[in-house]
Length: 273
Image 1: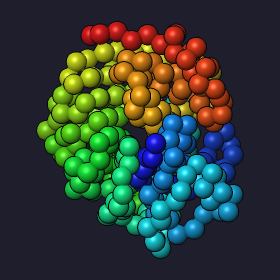
Image 2 (image 1 turned 60 degrees about the vertical axis):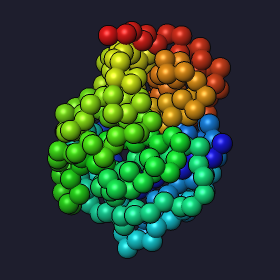
Image 3 (image 1 turned 45 degrees about the vertical axis):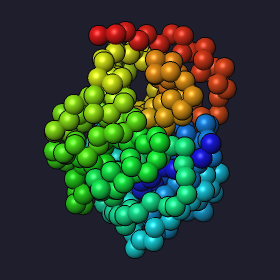
Image 4 (image 1 turned 180 degrees about the vertical axis):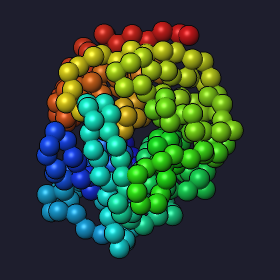
């Protein structure tokens, strides 16, 4: 299968426990990392320059399709604890204004700083059989400085196969009903999340694991769910994607077997609400 991930990869400047370091990040990176376990991935992104080791890592995940830019999207992340952080936008790469030709089994749109327009989402829904998206980059402020959030017209998301958001982010969406998309996933960190299939609500409880940090969890969850949902029913996909994310958080990577995912998925509780 052939899949496309759309969004900026990010230079993260991390301040944590008295240390400061840089690493590769961004929703597109983490979602592509997860989705690469299910299909041949291409990453449509934009940046000016990245360290060679980061480029090698991206190219090991999938083929890069690069929109030229004068800068690279850069965030400063200051961690308060394993699940809380302050976020500042320092620099932003170019907008992503068009999609490549050809066919894809799934397209996953995961912007971080307003680089994808509502119109591009609409065009993707019309062209491709399975389009997933994350809400975060549509509601974040795009000016340099501390990241704030703004209301977003959810009518442009109608027809998506999958939409993911954190429960706190979902408050910013307007003109939207859960039955406007096939599957709606609302994460809540280690607490019980909510999921909707064609408007029917379920709750799901992640498997608790000891984590140093939760960065990338929602993006990996979306990537894993999108991959599983290409071949599995909704509840099975939800359980397996939740287990996949727990293993990622525990190991900060995706080099585990699907047998491990299946075993842990048995411990994930999903209930109809």
